[in-house]
Length: 151
Image (cartoon, rainbow, N blue to C red; front, side, top):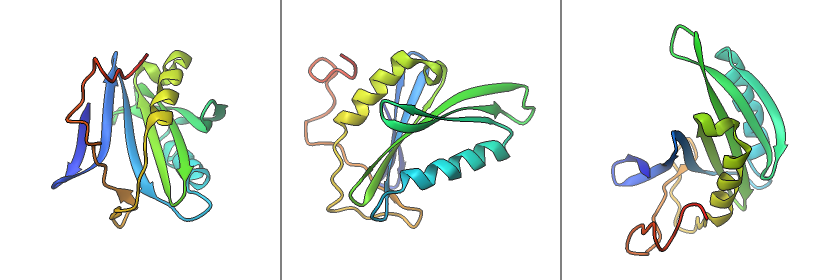
């Protein structure tokens, strides 16, 4: 697990499993949600980079499966899957890259991670771009034996 941070606050967490990576980020959102709007924005950005976009309905609702050119040459592409979940005043977004982005088996693992993610925004201080800092639960650290990522 890797945290993306600015100063003392982490604004994203990346879980790496078998060559695939799931990045989780939390955003402040207006009432009514942000995910549906985000789908259009993501699709437009991917298309502008020369990528292919497919909007599908998965177990977590509407998601985007795409391929994005890797590097400047555009000769290789990377599979990317975007999933999201709206809550009261927030949106949790996951970006899955690598071989798992095309895997329905990994989709089940992503669904479990999303369903087990706890969002508490009572003390949230969003950045101007809407990102909300992440805090680890007071469990004394991650213990893979007691808290398996995948079961």
